[in-house]
Amino acid sequence: MRVTGQVQTSNAIGYIRTRSGELAKFQDQVASGLRVKSASDDPVAYPALLRVKDTSERLAAFSQSASDATAVLNDSGTALGDVNDVLVRARQIAIEGADAGTNTGSGALEALASEVDGLIDRALRSANAKPDGKPLFAGTATDVTPFRVSATDANGRPTAVTYDGAAESGRALTGPGQTVDTRTAGSAVFQQPGADVFQALIGLRDALRNNTIGDDIRSQQLNTQLGNIDTARTAVAEVRGAQAAALANIEATQTLISNQKLSVDTTSGELEGTDYAEAVVRMKEMETSLQAIYATTAKISQTGILDFIR
Image (spheres, rainbow, N blue to C red):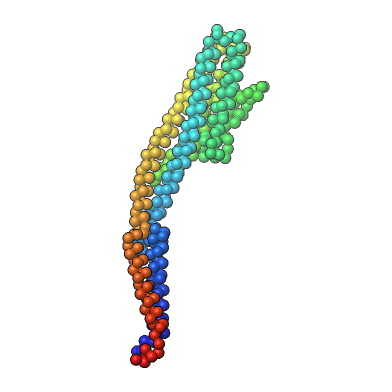
């Protein structure tokens, strides 16, 4: 069968398209750093690559959740630290107020009571803190203000504080099968039975401001409130301790997850990443092949009819 110039030209064009496509593929591998982008690039490696990437995404989600939980617990620790400072100062005031001989008739009791009014407001602000827009101490109820003044005296001072949050603490998934309490139910922190922060402060203030009792009775009441303050402070300290332990566990888990993700991402890179040495060699081969085809095609196009007659 006679091979015509048209057939040769058609074949040359086909070769050019094939080699150009392969050249473009290797050029893209070098430019992007990726060898496998779709199943057709490597049918064997692609399924394994999908599994590895899915694992990497899950580990990244755990890491992000752990970071968010760490931020919440750190903010919570700051708020609890402030409440502890409030109770420390309240304890000092109770001791000062119990020394009736020093304070009676000097106006010091009223001054101390006024300071406790400020401590009550401060404790409420800390218990209702929303550093990230969500309450730290409302449990799973993230759209409420946990504590509110539900009763006041004739002068508008708080006499009762009510918790409006959820009874269950919020939790974060920080690793495979691992959760940590983050947004604690405020009632379990500030209003434990026998350890109510607000009632301890309110009781202290009222004992200081009560002008109908003698110094001895006031001293007894203040000593009682001193015990209530200590109990409330212990309750807050227990929560702070639990959160500190949770932070330590999160840190350990994050280290483990970080190491796992590094290993997984390394495997992913090996599966999909470009072997630059091989890609450059193949790219040069395609360029050389194309140059040869171009040269051959040019000769074919210059062949005259007399060449075929010969």
